[in-house]
Length: 256
Image (cartoon, rainbow, N blue to C red; front, side, top):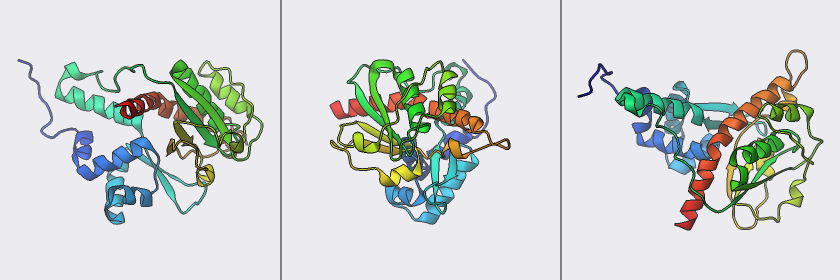
């Protein structure tokens, strides 16, 4: 029989998500970045209680917060799925070493080809990168596009960041108005300002929000935006790595 010394208490990640309210908060944040008032409305609990549990999740480094670029008095909370995957794997290993490496989403099942739209303000950095990264990862499982509320020329830093993932980024900035009458299954806003301007799309697509600051405005001490673009591409790739699984699950739920 297998036996070894194990901690008396379950791993922190298990204890955290064993709480029903923290589990509900994590489920909400797994779908979209949220403000506190949106989480309060979603779980139907007082703000002070929601804030307390968010602090617990932040202390465990599975949830992060970022000031809104639309309203600096607000913050968006984000669930770090990569950190959750690591913590889940650690919890499985603590239970039995044979469970190591078995965490994470199951393989994709073939389903219908879903249409995804990424939105940001300029359609010059964040949304073209997201479009390219999802197309690169999902291949022919999705149709993906991007647009902006105030389109600007494609940033060379975005092209350089995409190249680090083996992607040749070629993109013509597209105005939001040119896609607002098209049908999409998922519409993902990438900046807080465009979220406030996001129109209704036909067919009632699933809308989610990823709160990412504009890398063109995040200059380093030498006035260079490249490090910010590289960080943005890394964060987008982390989020997009989990997105096809959510898209597949959503399609299967619709068909069931």
